[in-house]
Image 1 (cartoon, helix red, strand yellow):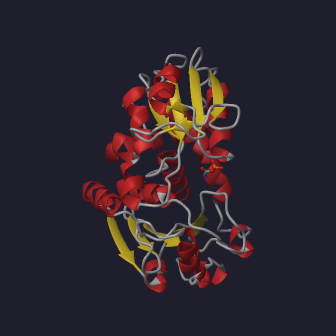
Image 2 (cartoon, protein in one colour; image 1 turned 90 degrees about the vertical axis):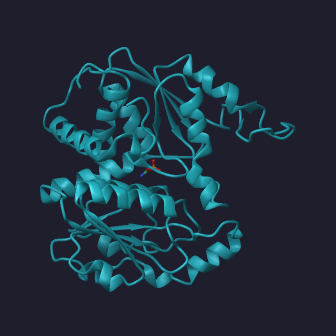
Length: 336
Ligand code: CP
């Protein structure tokens, strides 16, 4: 594995291997397996969990990390090919990426999509440029298309609760928000759960479709893993018998929808708020998942987040455990 920016970099067998190793290292930590290694972390967008968990993984592994927040003490970076750079972005990623690659052993990158065109976001232009130009391994901290470390942490949380994920019914449900959000997280839960052999039900209002290329990729993994993927607009159908309910807000699937129009489309579905009644439609032992941050009582009701079924804190912890494994593989640490 040269880079890890998408579930395709691992495949079905690779997903299982990372989760096996992460579970083993939760029982027995690997020690200073990253001694002497330096990770450069480039943030085009804010973070709490991703930043803290990557830094913790490097430092606890005996390595170190440099954090660069683009546009905040670091030059704003232009990423458009052929741009006439007469605006407020004085440096192009074509120089910035290879320069950074000369200083560190690997680069971690967070770069959200523009949310103007689903096809453009699915093509993942900034992350693709990092893969091409860095000269060192690149790991995703969420891009326009996927948030693969989140997907692995999600599936690890499900696996820990039920002992396995083969044929396990799980539901990814759309949730309301105050504004359109990227599709990277729902894409990654879908891809990772399909790779893990889950029976995945995706439910959302009409007009909020995930990207067709990601759905096709998930179907491909499901055929390999013995899982299944089904998309519906019927919440009762999606939730019935489900063992894990994953709530996530995302924006409408329409290229070029104006921000105001997208927000209005979301506001029309406020009744998709995930409540105790929503969860009660799933299996009696169902767990609740959300990647966080979550807007309480907009996306998910307090009673769910504070209830016994919620695993959102475990899920956030698991980011650290899966990333420790991935960093060891990419940085050629001493443990794997
Ligand atoms: N889940 C997640 O990626 O959280 P942050 O945006 O806080 O990093």
